Image (cartoon, rainbow, N blue to C red):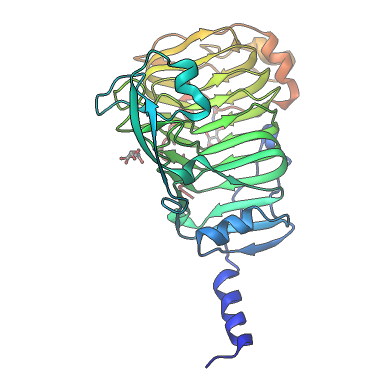
Length: 373
Ligand SMILES: *[C@@H]1O[C@H](CO)[C@@H](O)[C@H](O)[C@H]1NC(C)=O
Ligand SMILES: *[C@@H]1O[C@H](CO)[C@@H](O)[C@H](O)[C@H]1NC(C)=O
């Protein structure tokens, strides 16, 4: 029979294998101060419980995800009465009555039975000073997202995929939530098949966030428009958020990609919006510079918007005094129009602007977006 000490050593070996995996590249823009768990140990969890323990610990840690962590069924399922505000066809999302949403906002909608997995409504509450990094394509979270809230500072999330958050249900789960965080870099993450948002910031402000090389995969079998285009995409509405959003691929969504609000300031160079059946931008009370980006098959680039947008359609020297360089023009094919001209955006971003490529030079996307490292 092995000694207790030998068992202990085996456990340490199984759970704390130091991996060669380290952060690739450096954050630029508003999230540039993020160093994540660089000051701490590197750990490789082997169960959902262990993963959650590491991410919620108060130590600085680099947490390597080298397997799929499937949280579905770990917290049971709920059978309740929700509502069907978009219809009852099989392609429509139906809604969980979360916080009485059905009763408060969808009083005319027929009721509907919902059967959802509870784990997805209860994201991992990541604590400060963490790097969460996928080992190749192996780092996958199913059925639970990540939430950085209530003063969490200094987190890097790189090269993972998050999926299967009750995609058939509105309020089924968000993949990445920032709600009162600072110095965060979300890079090379793929999100798909979520119930609600792929990325959501707010209500509390998030100071110093960079979201780069993200792949929002909006393809779903259940959508609010009943048409396979996920409606709830990217929601950037934290109080005075400061966000750099660069080199991202937003694909096959049906709305709110992004919705802006809360007084957020967002610099959005070199993103690729592809096959958006509804609208991309909507919002109010926010500042966004959209430049060097490609809109392809985006039916309605902007709707229902009072946020300040600056979105040049060709290279634009008016940016020179605020940014120290010209802005890059956006390009449009088979798409509607987006031509924001509110120059208050430029001084709002000012020296926090990162470099931008020509829109014609970002053809590496979609290949470079998502957990492709
Ligand atoms: C997008 O997500 C859908 C649904 O999960 C999946 O079938 C498809 O392969 C994904 N697309 C890419 C390019 O990964
Ligand atoms: C195009 O991309 C290459 C490689 O990233 C870069 O060196 C070059 O400066 C870019 N050119 C423009 C005009 O943005």
